Length: 593
Image (cartoon, rainbow, N blue to C red; front, top):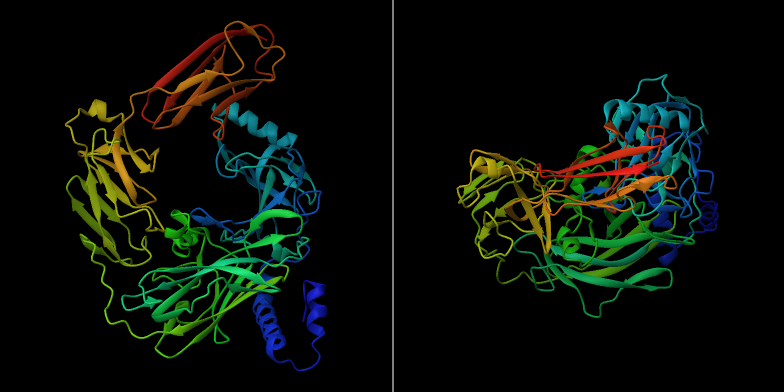
């Protein structure tokens, strides 16, 4: 048997005699982990892909980490807090896609390899000279900053180790690093790059912070109550125990969830573990492992986590059981969907085994006693309007509101509710429509149609947007005015209102003013903000010729780096910025270069 970590191999070979008690339990855990993880090694060829950076790999993010609405689909490789490190092609191939965007992966390259894989390099500061020249020529030709270019083989062929770009922090990212993925070229499924043989220094086991127990039907209870029980843990030597002095009892169908993360030597990041195992009386009833993901089902993560606990800032807990609707491909073993049936007089000895990719393991054992059958069955007494079944399309029309939820968007059957509020201070041209609640997750968008209060002309309704209210935040999600309703396709339930956006964006020049000599400046920078619908269009010209204005939404700036398109002399600059409903501001000035 091959062991990736030689220390683990030595520790297991040490047990040359039959073991009992704790030793046998440890060996049983390792045997289960390794026997089930070995087939995953065939997903990627070993030693085919090289390190895309010229420094040892340390990770700010691992494959399969829990993120908002998705799992992390690659490795976030640290760049020592710097930008501009050379990024190398991990293997021979050709550049098949180039993306320039202020969002997502920012500046990104995709390389297709002859063995059926695609590598992805994201958050790049800039591309190499040849690719930069190609992209810039296209941007000026199309007069468009954002690009998503698909290329055929032959345009940019690369050899393993070629410098293709330089690391950065573009796109939706908080600090400098390289986002690196390996995908199946045919299915586009992302595969854990660690399976290709990459190694990191990691001798620390994962951290187990806590668990939760969940009643899963109307007759289920935990400690006599029909509500989740959240319990923290504490570490005792090489294992964890519950920081809970009382006995735990349960009746009926119960699910368990866990809050855990991985750590590594000299790294502060809280990364995602590789595998999670839940055992009931030594039998594995749940086993998930982060080998491969699927973009088509990745939003099903919302039904795999305790969505309400995350939203209410209780903790990030991951279920070790399945909802009625679950299409994730991370499960290696399930018994009864991971749900445990508790009966009076029967105790269950439960154990979590959490493993990182290097084989470091943490365990948590706890006992839950079977409780007496409750004298009363729990009934949800909150009024509801209809039952939405997760496997069927759902439609409902109420006063001023229509909703259409596609089949499969829900994770379980739902008692559908909505209310209206006309007293909220945010109300402008409609009531606030409270659709279900913020604690109910979705795997897909739905259609929501809201009717404004006043009879406004179409010319004014062109300035209308639907706004999601989240505490004090107002987030416009746009909308289309048709047939007397504003129609949108939200990703979340919550509170929505129709508002008018009558204000233009604000343009604030940060380093230029009328007549300024810009000879000693490397760029022109503007801060651009909008009060509601958001900036959706901008165009800058110098002497009536388009210039490449780049966007950084993280600090609300637009900037132009001086290039060959603006020479010496006196120039006229014009910047036009529009929001999503067409309100437009224009800034003009003269400058010298």
